[in-house]
Image 1 (cartoon, helix red, strand yellow):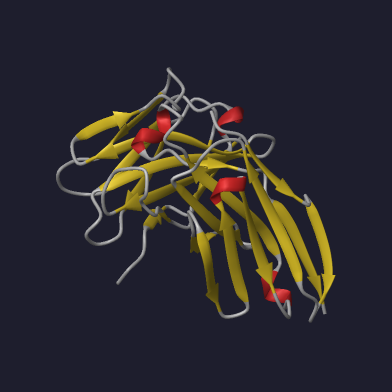
Image 2: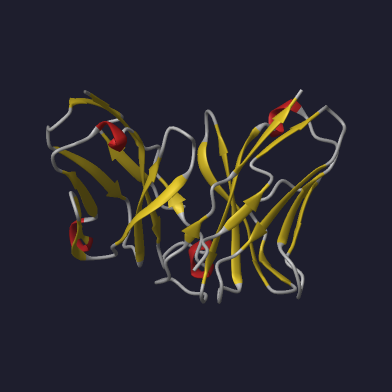
Amino acid sequence: GIQVEQSPPDLILQEGANSTLRCNFSDSVNNLQWFHQNPWGQLINLFYIPSGTKQNGRLSATTVATERYSLLYISSSQTTDSGVYFCAVVSFTDRGSTLGRLYFGRGTQLTVWP
Amino acid sequence: NAGVMQNPRHLVRRRGQEARLRCSPMKGHSHVYWYRQLPEEGLKFMVYLQKENIIDESGMPKERFSAEFPKEGPSILRIQQVVRGDSAAYFCASSQRTGLEVEQFFGPGTRLTVL
């Protein structure tokens, strides 16, 4: 299947700082989603962004499909941003993905201190 | 508009018992996916269902695991004779249609602990 690599694996910030999380993938994708897993374990949809740029409040994301990467920007971070951020993709080149199977990266663990 | 619902949120079973996990998709969604999050393996696809049909179960263990999505009612992931290695978070996702360019919406998960 398609390989999804996220970096950095861990990130520690002070409240108010900005950060950039990266997701690299090994093949062309048709679907890319960013999720936040909060400290209670819930998976929250952040962005559906197979290409282009989107913004939602302090968060924005950019996917450059031709270069096989996506970036998640968090500005003015808050303690409530803590948790694990996952990138997941669907690729038409993967047999399972023709049916919508998402492949997840291992995530970036973000800790924001007050 | 309610999101994807899963219950129970936490489930404790002893080895050898059965576990039943339920998932109600978002209103208007007829496609359901189950994923499992194991501590050392991350989030992995298990099975994809439409109403009354299993479309892709290639990610599901061959034994003890089964899934269904009946015409009426929630989707059920069933684990028979649970073992400690089944302890994990199980997530359900739903989508409005099938295909490559479709957003999946996730439920809050069920955390299964096998004693």
